[in-house]
Length: 173
Image (cartoon, rainbow, N blue to C red; front, side):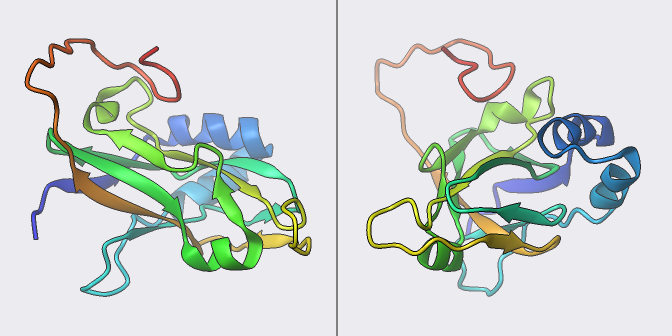
């Protein structure tokens, strides 16, 4: 196994801004959630994915979307990418989907002004897709809801990219 990355927590003020903007949490709720952030972990020695845990209770009605601030950042070696997927149990039971299908966390995202804060935008598609029954999805604080897999990537022989990232979600154009 290649040891190419490490997880950490973003600063509390960075987490607070998104948690309050997206979920309307009070200062006290943000502090409690921040203190209880769990760094992603693999469940078994054979697991490829690192589980990402909900920082606070989240309820999604059928068709509802949420941008979840994880409070997590990932520092990784150049030549690697962190791919984010929903946990399979939520996919099967609730058709939980990432709004961008697969999250792509580039190695240079860590150096952005937001410290590379990984946010995961999900939608409960149960009841929305043909043949599915609408179910309310309750994700408890501390429960795994997504997983990240580190993967190496290559570039073309004539690649000349020299841009500098500052942000995510469309920051490179």
